[in-house]
Length: 506
Image 1: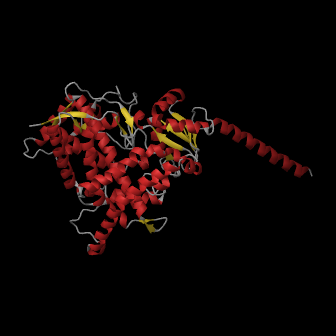
Image 2: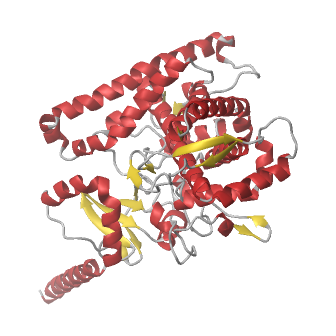
C-alpha cells in the first residue's frame, strides 16, 4: 500500500507542478496588448471603423508599442508597425508567417474558395499558381515579349493626353493612367487587342467590385445571420460576381477554342503567350484536376487588379510629386537627355532604363512615401509563434503597416519629404526592394508572400514615368496646387484627383 500511495502522491505532485508551470507560462506569454475587447459589441464598433482604421492604429501603437492586438471578428488581429519585427517574421521566420487566414464567407465567391495566388493557403496549390505566374508571365524573357504592346499603350496614352490638353487647360490624368494600364494588362491576360467596348466592359465590372469591396465586410460577421439581415447586400455581391463572369467567361472560352484549333493546342513561336494560355492546362496538385471556369475568372481578376489599380495609383502619386517639386522633374529630364541624346524618335526605350539611376530613385521614393497599399494582405501563422516575447496565436491574423514602416525616422531622415537622392550613393543606385537583408520599406510586401510581380511593376513605372516627363512638361494650372490628401479605395488614392497643365516638350 505504501508504494502505491507514494506513486499516487508523486503523480499528483507532478500534475500540480505542471499545472502551475503552464499557468505561469500563459500569464507571462500573452498576445500583444490592445484595447479592451467586449464580445459582440467590440466587433460592431470595429466594423464601423474599418475604413478609418489606420489613424486609430497610429494612436494605439503610440500607446501600446509596435505590436497591437485588435479583436475584429472571431479572430485576434495583430498589427505590426516595426520594420525589425517585420523582418523577423517575414524573412527570418518566413516558413511560419507565410500562410493566409482561413477564407471568409465572401471569399468563397470573391476568390473561388481561396483559389488565387494572394488568398491561397501556404501549400501545393499556392506554389503551383505562383510558379506558373512567375515562370510563364514574369520571367524576363516573357516580360520582354510584351515590349511591343507596352510601346503601343504608351503611344495611345500620349495621344490621349495631348488631345485632352489641347481641348482643356487642365487635364485629370488619373483616368488616362487607369485606362492605359488596363489596356496593357488586358492584352497580357488575353493575348490580343480587344475592342474598346469590351475593354470598357471589363474595366467597368472590375472597378465596380473594387470600389464596393468594403460594403461586403459586414457579411463575414456571423454569415448565417447576415444572409437574412443583409440579404440585399448578399444579392448585390452575387450580382457583381455574375457580371464579372458574364464578361470574362466568353473571352476565356474563345481563347481556349482558338488555342485548341491552332495545331491541336500547340502555340506557334510568333504567338504571344497570354496569362489565360498558361492557366488552361494547369493542374491543381492536391485536387488533381484543372481549373474550372470560376477559378479562371478569379485568377484573371487577380491578374488585372494587381497590375492595374496599384500601378496607376503609384503613377499618379509619383507624377504629383514631380509636379510639386519641378527641380526633381527637370533632373529626371536632364538624365534622360544624357542617355537618349538627339534621337529622332521621342521615346525612352526599355533598354535605356538601366542607364537612368535617378529615375529609379524617383520611383522608389514615390513608393516609399505613397505606397498604394498601406497594409499587406493579412498573414497567418501555421502554429503558435513567439515574436518579441508575445504570442502570435495560430488562429490569429498578422498585418504589417507598410506606410508606417516606410516613414520610420530611424531609417529615413526627414521621412515626410520627397527626396529621391536618399536612394543614391557614390556608386549610383543601389537598393534591395525585397528586404531580404534588412527591411527599410516594403511596398510589395516581403518574404515568401512578396508580390511576385514587383519587377514588372517597377518596369512599368519606370517606362511610363520616363516617357511622360520626356514628352510633356507637367505643371499645376495657374493658381492651383497639388493636394496630397488621401482616401481609401481598393488602394490609397489621392482624395482630389490630380489636375494638371501639360505642355509638349520640344
